[in-house]
Length: 182
Length: 359
Image (cartoon, rainbow over all chains, first blue to last red; front, top):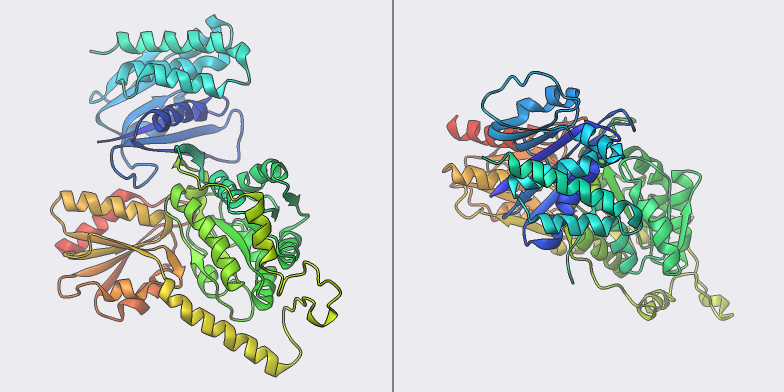
């Protein structure tokens, strides 16, 4: 069993952190093989950024697959770029606050979450990635939510002030993700 | 030891520290910047020295100096930066100075691209500087292997007083993967390693001027220089016994994929998928690309094999030249290539293999 995930968005949306939290949690809590591979150009904030996470029971070949099982899209340009790589029957997670484009495929499962708006409502636009991570984990159940939270908590250990907000963001995401499970 | 989730560059840097490396000099270049970044923080913690040199040339020569004084020393770079270091590497080879350097290769030639590639193969294995020297070239295909080979590189360098190259690429450098790190050498062990080099390194001669160390990257006597080269050639010959290779599902294979480094792991997963589709594929993955594991290609049952498929992230194909020399005309050789910073697609490997088997 191998799951290929692509997370794509603007630089600054926390795309890399989202992928890393998930991959790191998998490494810490399971015997599975897992890879994280970032892809970015010379740009920083505002440029495109995407990363690939592969979780597998067997050895992992390419840390970025040709075909994605799951795709998380945080902005419009990423949808156009990566939707063709999503397999038939795959899961498409979109940041519905800013991705308003028509989804021209009816052979994928669409999970919508207005993570930019929700983050702003919580008072910090930066937590949109943690909300989306919650949505992804809540929907796919790929790994225990508690383990993902432990990893986030560990990574943010030097900034304890941010923990309550991130906890709220992660739980909101989990709730949204779980609610959209069939 | 528990596994930790680490980036390839940082894992190599940490492995170097644990292997007893106490000096690093380097100059920034993508995609290996995390090596100097990590070591700038980490080396001072263990009493080591980190220098960001003013250039690649300066950095490699600082390593030449530190290693001449018996300290386990390292530099790293990526393709165009490695070219700049070639003078210092050649001097270390000539003076028989143990040092380790890593190339997280990117697209080329020229400034090329900042994305991963395997286009430095011939430079790495045939001519990393002037003068016709050779050195062990270790090619990891996972972050764990990069860690293990970094430790081996320091041991090999010291044992034979030679530069050793870790030939990685931008994928191995930038990806994160679980690794089990080696136990760190104690300060006593690090000191003992240094002390063991007293017979040749500049670590003090106690007023015994007749036997003081004399680091010479050449010699004005042609007779001495020939002897130096004959000794080195004998060492290179002996290395053939130490070639390392992964042979996977080769016994009954009808098609053999062959690749090194990042392409090696992609080819391995292609072998599994081809087998699942009923195609008897196998893999030969050199781990040392110098010395090249010719014997693994002799162990192939050519009566069963329809073709060898060379998989590499280089156009034109470069690794294929060593493969051809090892296969010695016993099977047809085809290639599956990409270049310029594009990463090998597993689907492309599978379809290339299928085309051969159906053809």
